[in-house]
Length: 99
Image: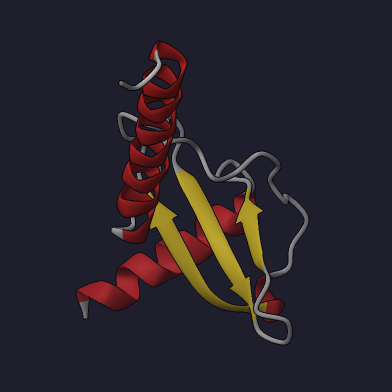
């Protein structure tokens, strides 16, 4: 007969595995469970940007996030959506999409 300690340990391990695999599956589907940007860059870096990703506010993050990928390094940098130069970059991107 199995001891109650073994059964409890087995249940805990199973629950931990399920929690980790559930979190991994959501992330692999591109679902973020929190805001990605902790700090934002407000100084102009537009000439170093390769691409820009705009993430609207949603149930997991109440802020609009603007994430730029840098040309040389591929590093992702969060941009300050209130910075004037960032607003200009977004406006230019939006006008190019309409064409």
